[in-house]
Length: 322
Image (cartoon, rainbow, N blue to C red; front, side, top):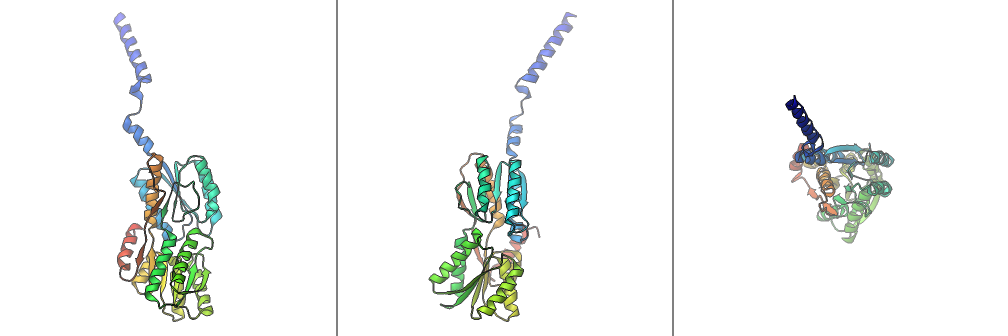
């Protein structure tokens, strides 16, 4: 009987050690696995264009590759700025570990400061903002992209030629930078800017805008549109008017690449929204882990013409799973 009692006492004692001792703590692998599941949110200013779909694909691939709990959200259209702000305000309640955002204008800064106040790192893609609280900006130098447009038009036009510019959403940071880059370069080289008119980055609106430009400025010899959607709309209007002049856009979407390969739209400055979003998620994790992150990361640009459009088109289709 004494042996039985002693056995029970020893068993109970071992049970207490098991309950209170190190043996019940999660393994190091389990702890690392748990801590690795960072909550990263990616929020875009629009969802209605292929450019945004490419950014979405890049973000979701990064969620998978870096084993994070990802949340993807987007406003319906780039012009719906209040919708974007509402998304950011609602997301703040969920307190993600890190935020990647493609903003439209500086109106987002007061909301983004709330994330900073909660020690949530904020990384910007595509559109940079004059805000010291950001961890990093990953994207194109939009002013440089505009300058690249000017360089190309200088190669294909005679000095003094008139150029029309179709801008996107007036006041949007990336739009203003692209237009300024092109205008500064072209005017410095002696070209005339016939007009600058807005079409809200929309293809249909660009058709109407281009028709108005043709009527008011019949001597234009080239068109720069601040994105590919508007370049495609401008081409449609020019074709109807039987005008064959260079048209250059920015983005490198599949429709534009196909049009360039077919000899319609002349050129595009390719951006890499897939890469922007992917790098942003990666660097958000680095920031959370206390690793250094560059304040400005250039995702790169490239001139697309008929010579390389077909190859680029296949690459973009693969990223989109087409």
